Image: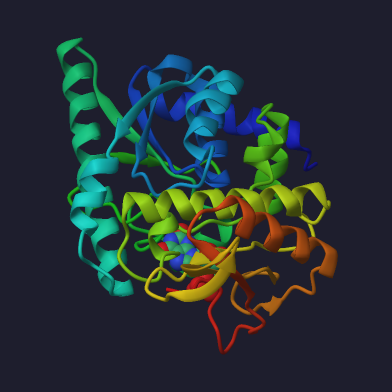
Length: 326
Ligand code: XMP
């Protein structure tokens, strides 16, 4: 019968058999799927697994710490962190076209991840060991969507940690291939992962890079991180996390709006709140958030975030509007 502990036990046994004494690598994105996949494989083969986390500098406040501290504390996993913020910011300098940004972030991500991967393979080789496996957090819906194939590392080509090259010489470990998202969360819980990781709402692979309308700079990212943290804090405090699918917070960096603060007029930027309800992100409706919550978020963001003098609410359904602005 289906119980979470059965699923974990069976997966652990299967992974042990598949990997034997070889080594495996897993990319962490900060998302639920890669975290649970990594935790399962760690449970099965311990230090034969090394995780890689590419910090592209486009994460929200506290998210990298969550991977580097909380996830490691909960699982005991070996983690290699690559601080690639400068590299990503340099590659993104001067670019404001949304598709260009996505392409650049995806490309740089693959390059940095491959380099880390190559280093791990070389280190293992020097120690007389072989890295033969790559862990992926592929879920059942991804398998169906891609035609049920197996053995390729290219399932979610524009998504998450996916988009790996075709010339990959790794065999895949995909311990979540038969699970739906809610089951993955249950497995994560069973494995002792913190709620903040297991219950995390969707967040796009390109991160805040596609939530700044305009060029992505460090200053703008810091500003957006502050505004986003306030919105998330207030939504959590109001107990609304389970009611909404996600709430992108977007900085209209290329728009200047006039405000009045203290004695003078200010020229700042608007922040957009995009709370949505959805079942699967294919369609969505804007969430009817309580006015007092919206009001607190607006007051706090305009008071606490320099350069933001206006907060606006996106009341567009999907379709026609996508969930993200870019
Ligand atoms: P849209 O904006 O297309 O988003 O309505 C649908 C869902 O997908 C997420 N999203 C992404 N996730 N990489 C991802 O991993 C991406 O490039 C990406 N773009 C959008 C978005 O947050 C929403 O949940």
